[in-house]
Image (cartoon, rainbow, N blue to C red; front, side):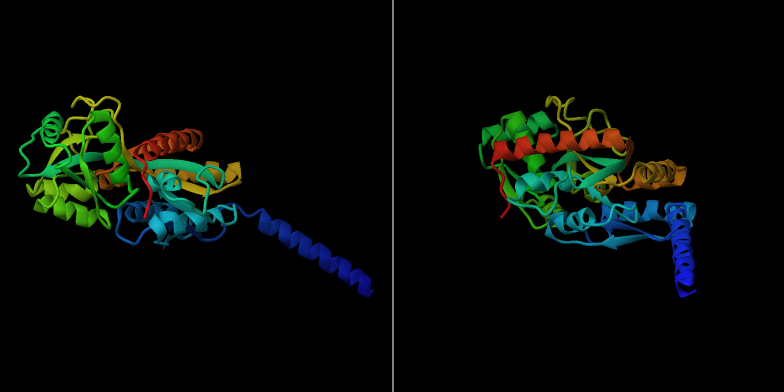
Length: 321
């Protein structure tokens, strides 16, 4: 009798397990890792989309800020999570730049992740202090060539996106600019506006308040076509620097091995959220260009970004301190 009860108990447990596993995804809260402190563009995007997903899923989407090591701490945490759809990361450009800049990183940007969907990007733009006489990119190049090495260009730090874009510009424009690294984009912007340095490649959201205040002048935007948030600013191609694209992009990824049905469901709901009129309006208000790339396209985009920035880092011999 005891054996019979044990068998019945086993059957009941197996049935309960089957019912639990058959629950539609998501059956519990979803964590979205942001590898930076609260308040930045990545964090804001995660919270905007997260609220919409919470409404759609009926499960809370929690933003988990895990700042540290230039974004590598959060990326490593996401890579080591179970591929069950309950831990995601909202990754961005440094995710693909860091492996070539640092000697060793705790994740592989290709092997350790499943791309889900890109939702937005912010083309970078070249700004100068308002006292710099150059009104165009070509005038800046001529000014810098007239005083080799004396014209300065700042960055958010060695190996930061603003640095690798500056090095790409130096190569494409064949101009000698002195790199001045800062500890973050904020201080670099402040010193560019204050005249301590001459120029800087920056994200649009970070620089627009100073541009509108007349403290910075925008010379060019690093995009194929003019952007909605700054329609009067010429592209770098229009400014004589061909095929010069650089953007801070934002996309959802999960750990490697994320099942396709979960990827598909997340893609459908994230795209639906990103395309809502109020979300698009908020993105544009932040200086972000909505851009949807689904899993396969996003994977190809990541591969292209890795190659592009690895080549720049090697050519410029960039090494993080």
